[in-house]
Length: 504
Length: 80
Image 1: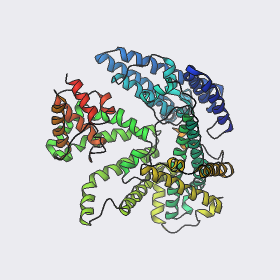
Image 2: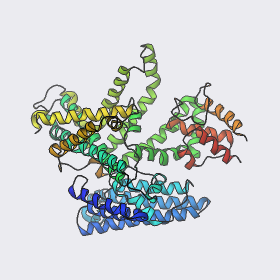
Image 3: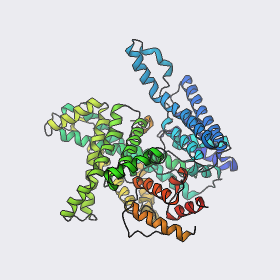
């Protein structure tokens, strides 16, 4: 089963019927659906599913029992218990994502690369998302934000809730539990909203994203045949592809969740309309950034050592510069965590952590200089032109990061950047000449992207495309939704590629 | 400690942290209303508040407080 398969729609339909007929037992239906979905979406060998079963049971059990134990403990014992429980959960991430590669590499040096085959868990779908949610819950219990949950079913639904389990968003127990526990009545408006949100996601993924993928694949597959600016165009296409893929996936899962009366936290807020790189990361994958900020950066900044360091730095370097040093240190840890979360591969580290961190650091350090220059040139910061220049600057800078993701390896990423600089205008091939894309495909890609960016612009301005459409006559709305369905059915590239963020 | 007294001392802390003597606080004031109140300054602000009132604000409250009104409520509850 995938999010774009017929079996997923059949699963949703049957699930919805049972859910709305089950009265107070709705959360049990959600748990059963979540378990079924999780095992149905995984690759089909029995051995693999048994491994998944063991991992899922371990995570839910540790989260449930750990929460209860932490809640009862006091003082140092509470901290130690939390440390061990979080360690137990984090171990799942490390064992399933990193250990096999690390140990196989070491064993290979001693001529026995297969010695750690038993550590090969394959890909554990969604592990990076639900482990973070579970760690957040245990930390909240330790911090006395709320008492531990006494019903194991509620913990099971929270960890494994099917729309979010494979690619987020990373959720908080305090946001979700009341929604799972309250009986949800059938609300046609909410169902309609959910279906429209899902359609919007399918449109982004199947009509737009997968077509941009063809360009990226062609150019990055044989980059030496292309000029620097064509590689740059392919990199921009990758940024658009990544956004429509991931945000499209989020629209589908949030829409699916709305059908069951459960609202998930938003993961995107018009990221391309960001004046700075810092703002971009506040608008992109919001729940992941928020998680690392609340559970890694803030606690670290508030440790005694960091506060003392801040005081010393203020004395030494003055108030303004001094207080930034502990912040930059905390940022290093935060971005290291984000790089590790993205799989820890060198090129992902550079793209998802190294370059964004450096750009943010430079932006922050140089901001007084930018301020002086813009004042000297009498630039009006509120003007549309200035804001547009800032949006373009942010997105162009981030293209450096996307090059490494597209390259698939650190060395290759640097070689591609070198090739771009040395062959800026000279190349054997043209971007469009080497893909199967026709004029209609280009219209769908760029026309569709224009609609997505218009919707994002409305979001940036605090409005929404849905509200705008809802204010129009019924006939127009009917036409818009049906046109969207027809475009997806006739021009959607179903089954051409999986969602990018499933790999994490 | 009265709410007014907390507001008086808290305003002084905000003015010192953000280097802005014109800051006036209300229950509804959020990070959106104060230009430099971002994720970086949030912890500096919390530490300055803790120093001023001589107690530790639990991390759970640090990450969930939504506006100045909630911050004042926390200070009043911890200062009892």
